[in-house]
Length: 346
Image 1 (tube, rainbow, N blue to C red):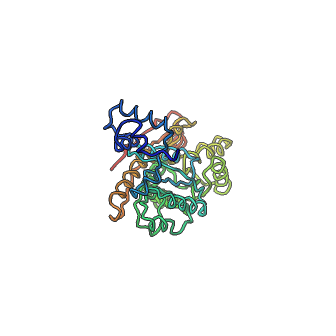
Image 2 (image 1 turned 90 degrees about the vertical axis):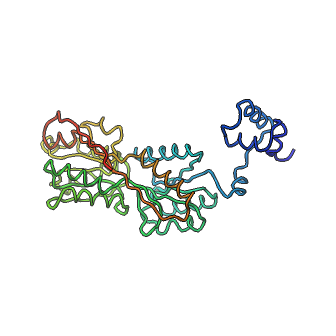
């Protein structure tokens, strides 16, 4: 017997071809008894739906590619899960690839997605990539960039407002008497790193100094970066980790400091993962809302599929702050400092 077709399934189940198509698309228009009969016929005949053939007929595919740097941080894991959930709500399937900030690896991933004619791409671009969207544009594949800006690219973009996040944290540290801050972690060639550093400088004001210490995204890299700061800049008053994952390494680096030195160093971070409040001392962190970022990213992508020629749009989401004892207790010297939380602002 040759390849089983939808028509074969319809004949076996005693229904129309369109009914089988609706069952395949999981439409709620089909009665459950009819659905069960069609599914039984599909199993009996070993029918496999040819999605690629359907894509050729319609010019559309229900698959979206997500290209990210990695998934080592809690933020990236939460973000990818949020995007997948939002895509599922639109009956779209996600395929995921990691660049590890390697330009060639990113190029191969994007080439594969173009060849597979995905219905859209969500891209957190590798730092040194130049013109990474050219192939997508030529293929007419909608794209939304995530977190990291691509200079000169007229493309939809979603991110937390990193300048505001840094500024809010800088202002908080300034009120506690902090002037010398090290930003540990992140890639110096990405827009979020530069924006957070700029925001910290703005928040600290004219008397403040921010030194960037770029590292890889691992706990070990955070530890090494913090140790470098403590060795080379004795006047540092605050260590700000680029992510909560980096913060774990920072905590390890300061754990052996003499008590008088440790008491004057504030610790803070970006992300505000659930584990941040469980550290000792609880970690002050700026929430970057991966659930909201993921939902907004998918919203823009769906909109771009419906309006491919419209102007590029940008969504910057306001961060939220959670101040805890790692800043309040260290600077003020009170182990029982009460955490405060500022609500998100429009």
